[in-house]
Image 1 (cartoon, rainbow, N blue to C red):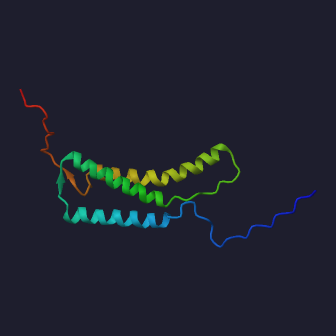
Image 2: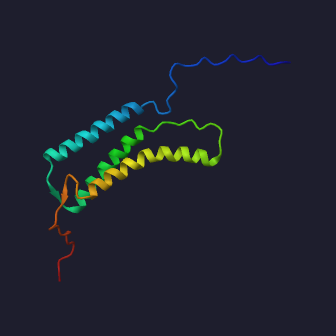
Image 3: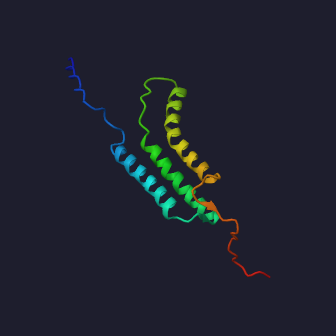
Length: 129
């Protein structure tokens, strides 16, 4: 007994996206990052204690990494060696890591939008002897 041949699949007009909400994620993270930067530079203080400045640094770096995550797409790697597949996955990871590191180094440099206070003393939890 022979099996009937399957009909060829009908090609779709657009390729199926791996993450269907990628476009909206890009928009939301870009608007959030730009609006936050504008608010901080217009309304925010000029100096903050170092823990709060580092917290803002990490927050903005995460937003930039999220924006980079929205630009990752599945790169077709097809048949290949393990090294080729690893390089393709690594290039997708770099799209998230590079914006994160760029924003983090920007906030830690002298060009940061909010400077670190010089006279900050950490809180004392115990009374001095």
